[in-house]
Image 1 (cartoon, rainbow, N blue to C red):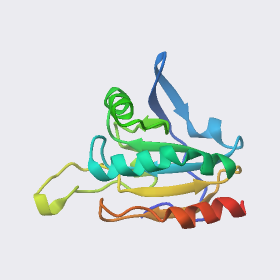
Image 2: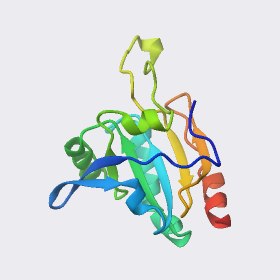
Image 3: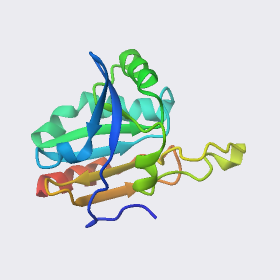
Image 4: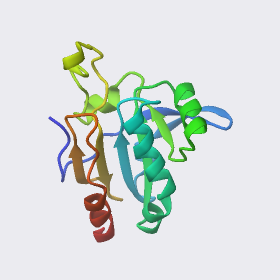
Length: 163
């Protein structure tokens, strides 16, 4: 079961690829600075994930105006994420959940990704979005079962506007 509205957001430490090389991002270090949007996406270099993160990147000022910092999380390694971001113009910070610990903590890890194609690939994150307020409490959760379904970004922004 995924994390629900009102739950304390599970902490994590994930790797991102910065200009200086790999760097750690700890969620608890970000709590209190701004509201946080976590976007879990299944995989880099896929059509829906690319479109989603390019749309969010091009509209990042709307999130900043709502006092929110956006992070995108996938199970890809940080070097693949960096290549994807460079190729597609993704500016949202990408966090590598290579061991799927964050996806499991948030309850969004598939047991079997795309079972209709007989793909095992357990641990791949379901496309989902969470809003975490400055106190570290989840205020919005939207978890999609099908990887082509996008979170409700308008509802997410409405929640941010009310924080």
